[in-house]
Length: 307
Image (cartoon, rainbow, N blue to C red; front, side, top):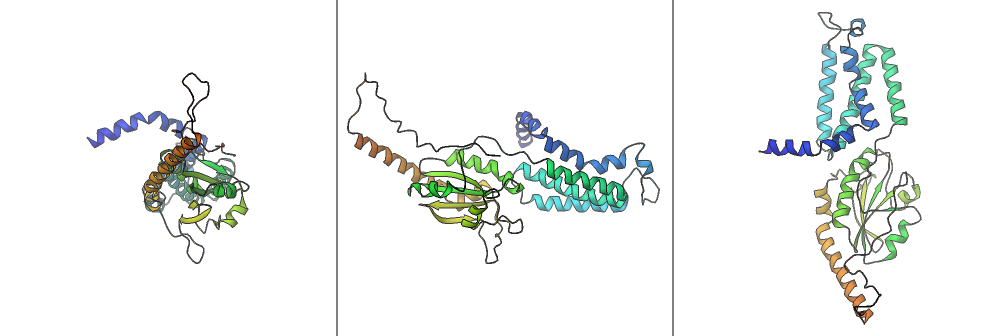
């Protein structure tokens, strides 16, 4: 029954998967991943390649190449144990496949190795992973707006993600954070993001390092009244992030999102009742005056991603 359910789910999402996989970044990454396999198996080309096989068959993998491929598989499986989204799984596969292909090509022929390495460098410089552009309820801060927004209303709790566009971990976490914003955003609980790769002063002010060695990207910080209450991942005395898994369950538990959401809804109801008391009088049925939309929480000013 579970197999049938999984198959139905896969078929239901198949158009979205095709649309996702046909993006240039993934198409080129796939071609570069299978490049060594194609070269080693291509008729008319593999006969001219070097081989350490005892039978002299240059169109099949030798024992050293098989060892490298098995080692690659073990590393990918270890890295994917901490992967959350499908993008992270595929990203790890692409990354370590390119590293293994570089080693294999240099071992096969130094000219092929230099050519493949040059293609990898050109790919990294020109082709970026696709950014998440799905539905979300997130306010994007700049270096001039973040302090003002966080301190504007002491009753509003903010969960802010500090990210950088070049970080693959931030890109993989983007749909998770967007989904949380759709589920929990309300008048008293708001979600925000700031690109500290672009606004370096913000990273210094809020002590979030952009160094890949620090592993602090992404960082989630809970603010109440403009003051930091908690952050994940936590940072040790050496400035390195303590390992923490950025999945939806951990965020909901660590940040008490369910409890914060319930308190925020009560805040919204109390605000609406206070507005009604201050209003004093209701408009007549035939009046053109409109009632305030008390059932709809205050909407934040949204901005598109500035890429």
